[in-house]
Amino acid sequence: MELIALGFDSWFEDHAKELVKPEQSIARVIAVDRGRCIVNDGFREISAVLLGKYLHEIESPADFPCVGDWVSVEHHDSDAFASIHAILQRKTLLRRKTAGREIEFQMIAANIDTAFIVQSCRFDFNIRRLERYLVMVNEGQIEPLILLTKTDLISPDELELLMANIRSAGINTQIIALSNVTGSGIEQVRALMAAGKTYCLLGSSGVGKTTLINRLVGKAELETKSVSATGEGRHTTTRRQLIMLEDGAMLIDMPGMRELGMVGDSEGIDESFSDVVELIANCRFADCSHSNEPGCAILMAIENGELSEDHFQNYLKLNKESDFYQMSHHEKRKKDKAFGRHIKSVMKHRDKY
Image (tube, rainbow, N blue to C red):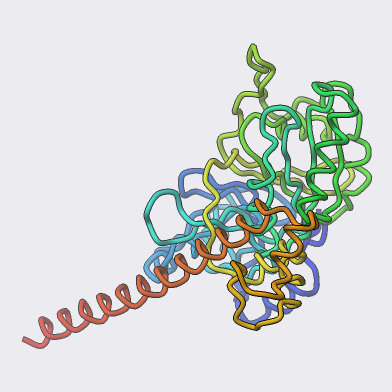
């Protein structure tokens, strides 16, 4: 297998020229488990660890390799394992705020062409969460596509209503409705996937992501669990990994996400809420607060039923959350750098005496 089959194109080749040294080669991270990576260099899959020097220079969790990354590696012990010297620039990325109160973001995966955002028609369907996924995907410059699973559990009329609710929320992303039980919609998904391109599945636990992968692979490649007594799926995936399909496309499976914190990117929010942004541009006053001003395009659209108030309130909420993270992260970085300078000064002073 050549690197091009793993998605290595001219864009990555240009960024690798000055980074990869003669004794090193290019490989793609296909799995990460407890700090150890599995990489594919086009010939084999081998275990790889970060070089000590690289670990010393890491300033953020985002600097660690993630699934989908391209890395420069040096082989050791007759190619039994490799050391990672550097990460190539990421063309696209998926990231989120780390869980809890910590002001930092976590890399989920990188260099993805299309993200399939998966929601179950019966238990998991939530437009506000769908909007958060769209912001995450758009912020990372990845093409989004919505998959509605478990259509066998609802009627055609109920499915039509769910899709209408998505459209009424101003979401114009392509939607594919499918069932892992009947197989409906599976071939439609498969037809969209091209050789050498990377795709990922995003969604909560139990929405059928792993079962869908097994359908696309054509065999039980990954472990699944039976649904609960209520028909709701059970969590299966425990790590992120890149899987090669027979037609040459690549698919990243990943655990379900409970928390989707914003990481401070207004462009991703504006792209996901383009209908709101267009309306705001038509307000009479540039500093309109959209509360009681005359000529407010937002208020008129809500009153006329052209804009969902919940959709607009979620836009405001995500912007507020993003701004808070951006400000807090900036302050944290200033403190971290100041502390680093202080430590260096103390060490220099100690060495002097």
